[in-house]
Image (cartoon, rainbow, N blue to C red; front, side):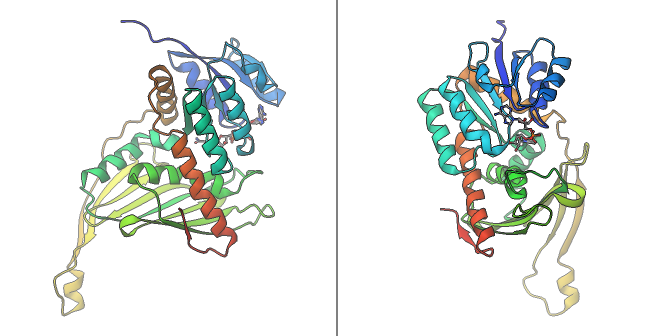
Length: 340
Ligand SMILES: NC(=O)c1ccc[n+]([C@@H]2O[C@H](COP(=O)([O-])OP(=O)(O)OC[C@H]3O[C@@H](n4cnc5c(N)ncnc54)[C@H](O)[C@@H]3O)[C@@H](O)[C@H]2O)c1
């Protein structure tokens, strides 16, 4: 058996999230992290201490050399488009953190550039690689849930407050990418409401309502201003109900055999109550593999084979398109806005 070729990775941005990419790509057998860039010297010190073989630089342009074949962009969103464009023009494959860009037009340009130069462009929609989310998608596709009614998501905790984006652009990309992946369809319309409490004009609390084809409704609550860390998605169907709790260490998915069977007719309230179904709660075995590792392995696989990534540039643009519409609604007194 031939060993897969070693792919040399450069990471731009080594704040909170970038070091996780550095760790994972250093751990994977067929990749090595050759260079890391950050504007802050102390972040580069951190990398040099842990990875003595990795070169560091304050100027990301140093990564446009043959020692780097693919770059991870883990910088603030306002820099994504410029960095990704330069990387693609320099002939690098790109794994860019979510959201892909500030505007869908910028994202589309990146997709076009990646196509033109035949490079892999992937977006860090980490949850699409989460085994619990894959389970959810397969369960819905199996029909066991019955008719899908609605989905309700909560992604809240205290911080981390961002300066260049509001909470919706920071946290909702996760839920939107999960919804698009699990449902395999885009919403018809979106509305959003929210409020800016701590930083002027930067919403720290937001509520999104999305209408999908087939009367499927989704509601997402995101907040940087909540005492509890909650990452939960409830999926309600006519036959089963599922709760996906990402904070749970092992039992991330619980399937409730609960529901309401409407009787053909009922004369009294007691008869109506009899139609509630309280069945078993099952907890399927879900792999505990690290989603970021699966994501990074998929990126390397796509570079090696030329396959289109699961979270490709188009899916990144679709998430941004929904965020743009939601942002319009947020500024329009929560009007329901069409997505197309
Ligand atoms: N997929 C996920 O689950 C996940 C989780 C957290 C953050 N993220 C994403 O990762 C990205 C970074 O977020 P973060 O929380 O790490 O931010 P951060 O502010 O902690 O880190 C960003 C780093 O980028 C550096 N930087 C900025 N401009 C640069 C440039 N031109 N060249 C080199 N370095 C530069 C900054 O100095 C900083 O250290 C964002 O897009 C965010 O949405 C994704």
